[in-house]
Image 1 (cartoon, rainbow, N blue to C red):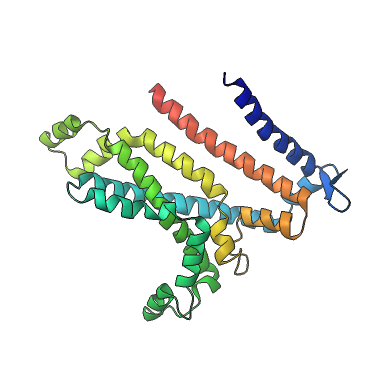
Image 2: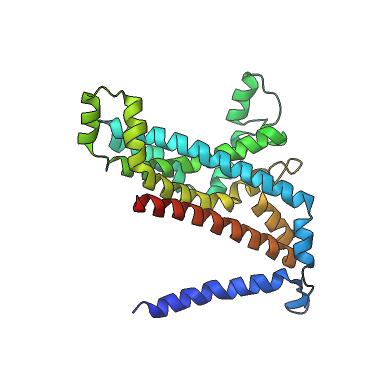
Amino acid sequence: MMSPGVALLGLLSLIPLVMLIMMSFSRVRLLGGLQLEFVGLDNWIRAFSDVELWKSWVLTIGFFVSTLGVELVLGIAIAVVLNRLTRGRGLLLPLILLPMFVAPSIVGLLGRYMLDPTFGLYANLLQGLGFEQDVLGNPVSAFVAVTLMDVWEWTPLIALITLAGLSGVNPSVLEAASIDGADEWKKFWNIVLPSIKPILLVAILIRSMDAVRYFDIISVTTNGGPADATKIIPVRLYEAAFRFFDLGYAAVIGIMMLALTIMIARLFVGLLSEKETH
């Protein structure tokens, strides 16, 4: 009964993928209709020899690691605090989850206005602390700012998934550990964390897929600047495809992003399978 739907989904996935692969070996012309002129490996050679593209890959990996690391630490901490609350959780939880329901473009607009050097609240606070530069005009602070915007929006998702995992930890095991003299840190590190590891892997997998494709907030706030300090791979792909209309080169970048996404997914699925085996 599912075969018609699966077949339709397969077609919707395979046809764009085949077209993407064909475009990566072609020069795409749009005047007078779509035309593919075969150029062999030219686009691929250009991509692998493009220093600026590799700088964008380094920025992408840095962004990926920093956002995922901060979101994981903060998400676990928030979930542990919420799990210990006996009163007020019903009121506090919706407030904490609110950022993840805001569209990323709106998050970018909020961040841009809050960091505006003329009237931005955060900019005024930073100026009071001695940081006089334009936050989004400085390469280092701009990268930190767009990273923290993503952290603000998606840490609640990690917290929500982790909170669900904490509810499944056996309280009798924690009680036995307390009787044996284990402190809170030892109970968390040796009992709670191993118990919620599969849940955490699922949360990391979900966020990894989004982090690789991160575009909206950067597009609204810095558009890859200043001095390409925030021009991660999705922004570079957008410029190649829709600013310079170099669709063949953009197809190569898209396939590289797809390959990275598949590698990340296989890594976390492998870790999950290993955990289930043990």
